[in-house]
Length: 197
Image (cartoon, rainbow, N blue to C red; front, side, top):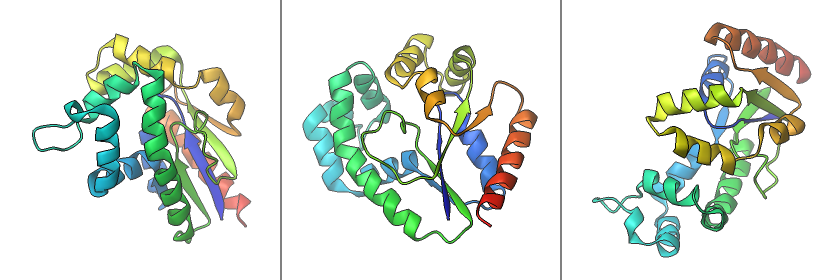
């Protein structure tokens, strides 16, 4: 089975591309969803995060306030590393487990922080969803309702566009319309399917 690691910066359009691959019934393993589920279902992880960041990151229901935590970690490199050290070994473990359950010609692992990660995720190819920084900024502020300043901080904390381009084998240029994106996904689906024959 071919394993494609899909990555890209904030606002690049990863979710839109992934949804298009899903239309072909391509299995998708998403590290962001795994992270969310781990925090929601594993009390030990939530306790580790609370011990590291304090009870202020919990909401009224004693659940993680992701917005507060995001603000903290994108303003402090050390705290971001602390969070990654708590979450990434478990995310990595879950990804490896999920890959073993897949029976398909190819699957996609969504790893937004692939270039930044210290953990070597199993993959055969890296697919970058690429967009100009101005496009990323516009999409992310419109989608998240966040300020340009906070989105710029997140972009600054992520790998640079140049670093992601250097790591990629396949690149989708997502500066255009959804139709343009669909055409590129269609072409890659054909390519990946052929590579597994």
